[in-house]
Length: 372
Length: 125
Image (cartoon, rainbow over all chains, first blue to last red):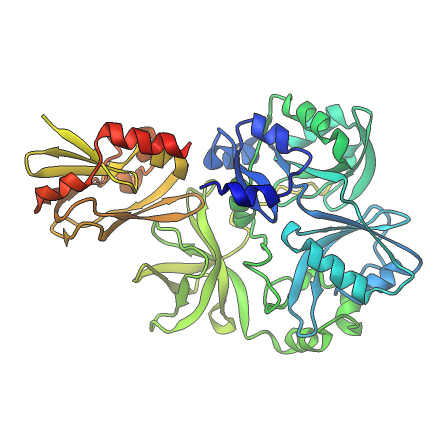
């Protein structure tokens, strides 16, 4: 399974050694060698995160700061969120769009005070940086924070841990951020994540990441969590994974991300693909991303064809697997707008068999976000 | 006396008379991780050696299982439908997949004994 030749070219995060020492099963991901699971196992890691707290190394993600006057205005030319009205410390989810309204990548933008802080997907970061360098005006400095690590502490027990180790951070509400010291280390802490649970993301210098990670892991409620559980957690939370649920051929409207485009931007446009996105806002998209619950126990994986009651293909699964908290299969995918209503009966073509399923509300498990 | 045979696909076949009981090995269950779904063949189905015969899914992925030997399926382990984690807990025992009536016992010669299989696994870790 391990190709010794490919390992040489894989990058390592600042927590690579810690992950190996914790018994992490290391796999290539987004150009890095990362832990897909730890001895607890994907199922146990998933359930532990929903019940207590899980620590994730997400340092493969791209951390970028934009400096310069009019940086908000400049960034708005590349994405459909309202950045100009983002107050210091506030965060917004958005998408870099292309001229056909497709999604180059999805990202979180934070107003860091005298800069904008962007967190982009690890697999896309090089492309995103090239795109921004080509598209942003010369007055905007793009600082790729390659030496910073990113940790995520997620779960209902996360706040109690942060209260002890990072006093003050527990006061942050969902989608806000602040500078906080953890054990003397200057960190940028945000109340956000990718699990549907309450939780924090901690950006910090890579040189001190292992010390902080060990401190968090020393807490009784905290377990190390790998990429496997990260995927099943975000799937149950109904969150998109770029390259699967969203891509350059999918618009934010089709993907059900209309909520992330604020009113002013819907009206004004001024981002790539605005004409197409505005038309879809007006007329409705032809296809929509929906939650899909298979009725039996068989998981329906990415690429599975979705059929209507007459057996006609109306779409495909974009992410699917087993939901450990739900205790059964769970999926999301694209179907025609007419078939997108909750409880619409569908068929899933799994290994030649038509398995019954229905359109279901997302998230599949209640969100635990802390809104104060 | 039963003898246990192994395949390169990490399946085991325990043979008693002309009936073989098939499952996946301890190494396989460990590699797959938490098993959440198993699709088993129906009794009466006839298969040739290496035909796709079952599917085992972990949280992350689905894997095909191939018939280790030609024959007719006589029974499937229905308990795995409700409790697929049995495969993780006891891969070589209660986590068995199906029983098959061997139609060509000579095919057993193409399979590995415990020692050869242990060497194969040792080479992988």
